[in-house]
Image 1 (spheres, helix red, strand yellow):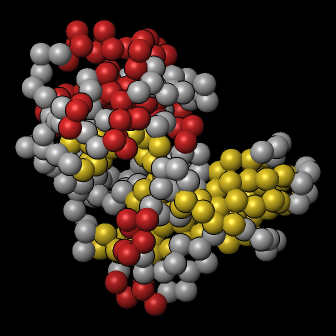
Image 2 (cartoon, one colour):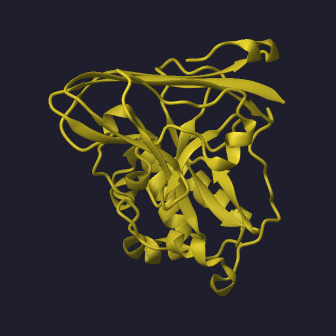
Length: 278
């Protein structure tokens, strides 16, 4: 068991009254692990409505006035301290046996063109055993075939673009892996949240929210990460959906300027539980 302190500070300059939505709270299944409430703090203080979206994400919405808006949060969560579980015997379900709510994660979506990559995917992976081994094979192929680099980021880049360009950032690795899994009849969904440098050498770059994906095998969802291709410690998910279009951490329904964006995710000793968070 371990404790992780996770939080963020985001500052906007907003030229006119603007509505925003926020996906900055842990998924409902992790609420019981929180040791401090994962409150969203607004400066200036503003009315905020909380709700669950159609994917089960804990969301908030507000209307910000013209001027500077600071959005922050700081929490402590209990974690197993173990890498994401490996379940080699997790079966791949036949389509007719899948729960109805997983079926949408087999279909094309904004960034995941299943229809354009199905024939290619079956040529590449059709001879591999179904189930966990197939997902690992896809995950490792994406990891080994795509070059990571922040200059390659583009908000319009799709899985088909990534397959052809062989370059991208974590969301692009994720979109391609999701698409290839869906092509092979494995439900796969996008996920985003905190991932600190726990159990691995620290990375010399600013902390950010990270993208991964979940596949439905053996009756439950399992985390995979094509960017790193290892079972990491300390994933704290904030949102899931069909692809990145469903999982934007913040969405502004009007122009704005991002003044500051800081994220932290660090292991802390148990005596920090008495710490006053934001």
